[in-house]
Length: 175
Image (tube, rainbow, N blue to C red; front, side):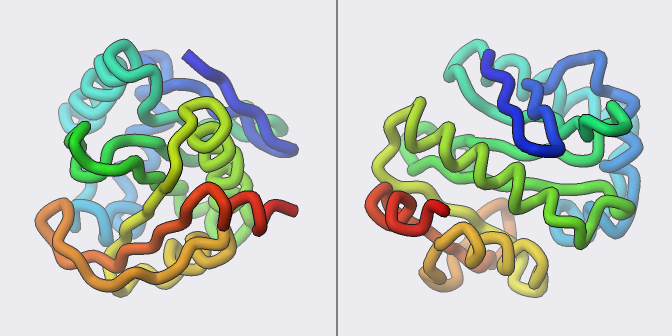
């Protein structure tokens, strides 16, 4: 299982020791408004951790917890996973952050590391990201990554804005 590092973050594959930090984030209504529309229960968060641990074993990738190096606290989470959780679909990246960590560049920082992992380690030829149509903050991160808007598609029981990039676009956008 791969740990990724950035200037301010350590991305660790989700595990049971992350429960408190993940639940703290997932129980914030503002964090979940565009994901499930309601805060997680403790059971929801544990179920997520259990699913993610199984996917790490099965696929060798899934969700990471974002741990801020300065505080050693979980401030977010993000993934490389199959779109719609179906291996027949392309890979997607996604993220969420604790409300206190919004607007500090953490999502872009973590997303760049996850995207590099997908293209360099998993050798994917393309990557997409989806978000609720009203989630301007996530759309902005997708654009900052160099992803192009593809349209509205139905994923995760909602009409989502879909962005994508291929490996050549990623290489051209790397700084």
